[in-house]
Length: 62
Image 1: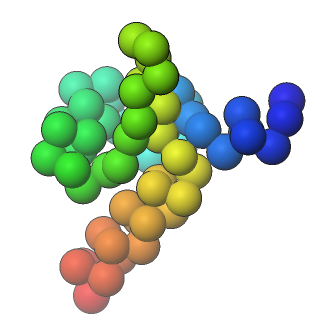
Image 2 (image 1 turned 120 degrees about the vertical axis):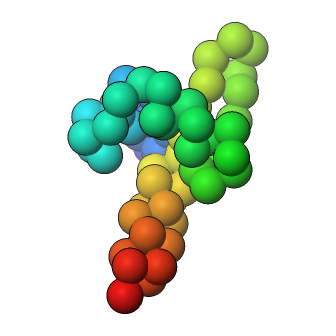
């Protein structure tokens, strides 16, 4: 796996990392709380976007 591919996650990978369901992840993408890109018909989420999402959630909870 190259560095470029390792930096992009699929929706199922994000589901597993965040322990969330598919519809919740897509809701986060739709509401722009989780940044994603589309390559052809494939949705990919940068690893940094997942880290930022977690960081923002922790800050909001504090």
